[in-house]
Length: 232
Ligand SMILES: *Cc1c(COP(=O)(O)O)cnc(C)c1O
Image (cartoon, rainbow, N blue to C red; front, top):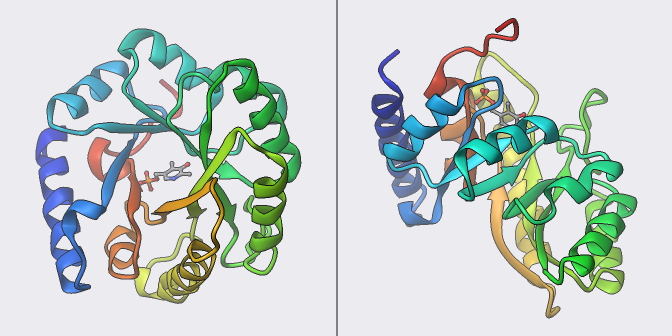
């Protein structure tokens, strides 16, 4: 692997090429660098190399790093417990992982306390994978309707999915395609707090296929920072 800056340059170039192949504007695809289990120095290197958006999947780790790095565009991408919403509500720009009305209600309540509007994505379990969080494709609209009706401090910006890990990323193309179809259908709903901009899908392994199928945020960790060391 190259340096963090070299890896980012390569990922940006591949992302642009994939967007162009799909007839899309490369500028519409945002790279969210996923820094879980990596150091604050790594984050600073990524920011210096032009990354603007940082994703973390655990609340405590996000808070520790927030203290040291400061207010960049922090994304909460991992499963979020209701009782932890209060810690991140004024620190993140986007919560990718809203998968229940109960969680949305708590986000709404805490956002109101801080007098802010929170941007969220609805997490969809596109492959029906039992080990993963997210609502199924058929239930996403119901959750969306409920959030729009009852959560006046939430703006719904789109959808997120985590595809199953596969050797050949071509195998997950159908899931990404289903997500894009759902995204287009829901994006057409007219509501003052529905403003679709983000389809968050694609990780290190499947990011190119995801962009070809319409991703507008890719969440990439390993391909930038190398393998995660869980023992450090
Ligand atoms: C860890 C993680 C990623 C990044 O995974 P890599 O395979 O390291 O690129 C993306 N999305 C979520 C939700 C994650 O937890």
